[in-house]
Length: 422
Image (tube, rainbow, N blue to C red; front, side, top):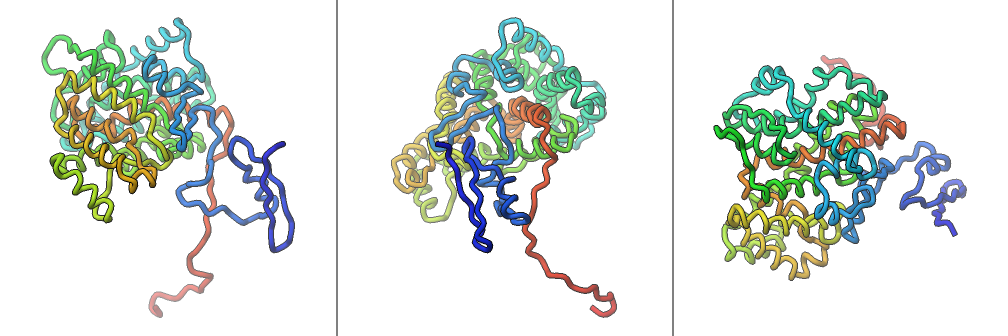
């Protein structure tokens, strides 16, 4: 028997029965019964603004899958570029497809010299790297006017390759500029993550040789951040993309949303919290302050997950590998103590507050030498593939331009009063 819901208009007594499909109901059916009556749902907390085949997320069960594949399997067995291919194309590549994909991305990592010399280097010396990145992505639409041919398959593929390939180059360039260091060109002999580390850290050596453990750890972190369903940044991309803006403009909009501290700044907040706590001896006092409303436990809880974030379990293992190379981050003991105390306290478990992906990612980035200002940039690099998968999907499904409604709660009609009579 099909699941349905019945809605009755008590003013008229009329009813309508609506099927429940894929966990949702069709709002167009609601409009048939109640025209000009809108759902009031600030922040879209209970609204499905899109139908998508890209990422499945069950927050209550702590499940995350890309195109049906569990995130645990992808993190353990795949690579970021293979996951990017999966998100974009819907299926895992065969050997030839994978080699072509990696080759195409590897040989599109360079950015136009004018982008670097006349644009990126034009920012103030202390500009935030995320601000540089947002602006540079948007500027690429002026360098690649063919990107406006959004229904040309060849053009779309070129823009997707360009964006995925050039994001690490622009990200590293933004960092180098912000700290007054010279730009490092891509090294096409290195894999995706190693190449990024080279562009970040190379100084004067003929060839930068990144530690393979750190390269692998970064690749796993890129997999974990590649997509996460309809979050703020992805929604910004889909709204912008629905106007048929070019992909650079749409990705710039998503990156701008990510720039906000409520979205992309969570792992920064964790580092600041752990630094503020200062030592393991202060953990229980900090927890007591949080419970009394005097502080906030950063890196715990999630808008969607009401269980242990599956990415957090994976990232904790990655942390052990990284610290084996870099030495233990001095904040780690505080983090472990904080997790132990919080997870043994009914106050937090009853509220379903468990560690999320941001609780440990900042510790890893910091141990690898990344400044806090780069944390959100590191989020944007892999999320680009997820954003582009959503961009393709909304075009292929011919989604209408986004146009939500509002409930007006302002002044009623009133007459204009002349300036000298006010």
